Amino acid sequence: MSNSSTDTGAPTQQATEDYRHYLRPHYQPGVPAAVEIPDAPLNELLETAARFYPDRVAIDFLGAAMTYRELLEASERAAQVLRTSGVHKGDRVALITPNCPQHVVALYGALRIGAIVAEHNPLAPAEEIRSQLDAHGARVVIVWEKGIDLITDPVTGPRAGSDPLRGRTVFSVDLSAAMPVRLRAALHLPVERARRQRAAFRAEGLPVGVRSWDKEVAGAHRIPSRFPYPAGSDVAVLLHTGGTTGTPKAAMLTHANLRANANQAIAWVPMLHEGGENFLCLLPFFHAFGLTFNLFCAVQKAATQVMLPKFSVDQVLAAHERRPFTFFVGVPVMFERILNGAQKRGTSLDTLRYGVCGAAPMPPEVGARWEKATGGFFVEGYGMTETSPIVTGTPMGPSRRLGALGLPFPSTDVRVVDPEDPDPDREVPDGEPGELLVRGPQVFAGYWEDEAATQAAMLPGGWLRTGDIVRRQDSFLWMADRRRELILTGGFNVYPSQVEAAIRSLEGVADVAVVGLPDGARGELVCAAVVLAEGTAPDSVTLEAVREHAERTVPRYALPHRLEVIEEMPRSQIGKILRRVVRERVLTGASEED
Image (tube, rainbow, N blue to C red; front, side, top):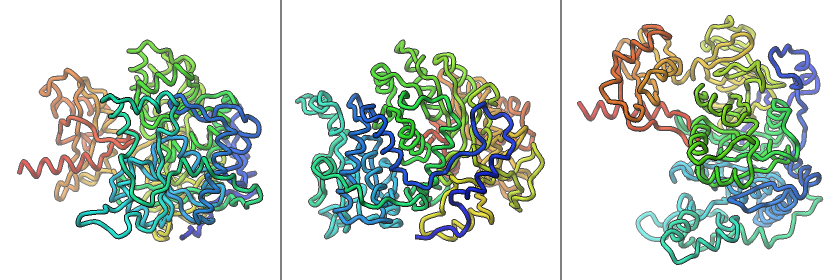
């Protein structure tokens, strides 16, 4: 394991004091300029919640309830299972499951003994997951039954291996074990629907040597209380990042990083009631946004996490009718689909007082509909995996600016600099685009065993290069674009998100992605790929119409020179447009036409 040589950990007491002298214009009353950064493990959050709210429901999974007392006890049994399986401090424990109670139990169990939790996307291709496992070297893998084939070798055929488990200890998770009894029983009914549902949750057979996580945790003793805890500076979680631009890297987040960001997020929303909130938990735990808000902020506030294994509007609304949500963190497409489903079903959303939108800008019309339907308030945030993940947020009040990335979080410093000469002491003028630099207690400890990538990302003084091009105006940050997705045409920089915003308001356009295509000496050609709104005639949205509409708000050099109509916009699991995939598809289509 390698660690960055830069100062990326929790700030000293002096640094924390310095933050208190920063001017924080537009902060909501009650939001501090700095937050406390405890030098303590994440497990303290769960232990505190269980001490003060033992009978409060911690997790509602499809209607099955687990209290904070039960969650703590299960995590301590899980810690003992891992300990007796040979896991030591600093060892990696890989988690490959959808959102479920077993995932939470395993995470807190592994953290309790000082292990490092390596999070994985359970829907990723087998090749991607195997390369990640090989990179971080986890010898223990906790995987849902339907994902066993992702990590095991076949027992027969040309690719068969002598050890299907590849020398690892593998625990299987039965998602149905966490369901209510009535749902579990329904899976075994002799009808086709039950067989289909059972097949979605369970595997028909498991390789020899795979152990049952559910049974072993249920039968284990709790880890002795005297067993040593990890330190705040110890690495807690590995999150894979960079998958949309190349080979993913594993970002190392310490206990202190994640506790700092949880404290920052909670300070940003001071009106949340301890022991009185119901969080709708939809974002996946392998994503930093979902991990921090749902597994750490929710636990710190002793909130109930209403958890689903996948995003289903019908299941969301059924859960809301059973246990009304008060707080939701999601991406724009989730907000929109929940709104549409609630309207169609006649379900009231008026208990949802607060919403936080991330990963992509909230379309103004969706935000307005959300606030009208809920009577509540939504804000937007910006962050990245390397910052645990949240850096900025729009204020939870009238001073917010819709569409902005927001203001720096408490205890967070930012700079906007020339990307070709990123000196933190020389910022570009307000209103000019520049690369965003971030410094704060949430900034990661580096990339796992990749010192070169760590050094490329960090500048002296603990400054992280985000690679994102932003503008600052009246203290608020606004996204110009991701530097790696800038389009260079005829010597000009074109920011895809700016052009997309201009095109998106054109009648007949439901979605749009702007990418650069090779264009000889000019560098790149601006191409707009659009999804047409339902009922729109294909010939009604032309390149000429798009250019004429966009010219009102973007320079002529940024106007598209090519238009592609596509059936569906490729997005990541959390709703981000995958511009790289759009570009590849456009280029592939062009080569096939040639």
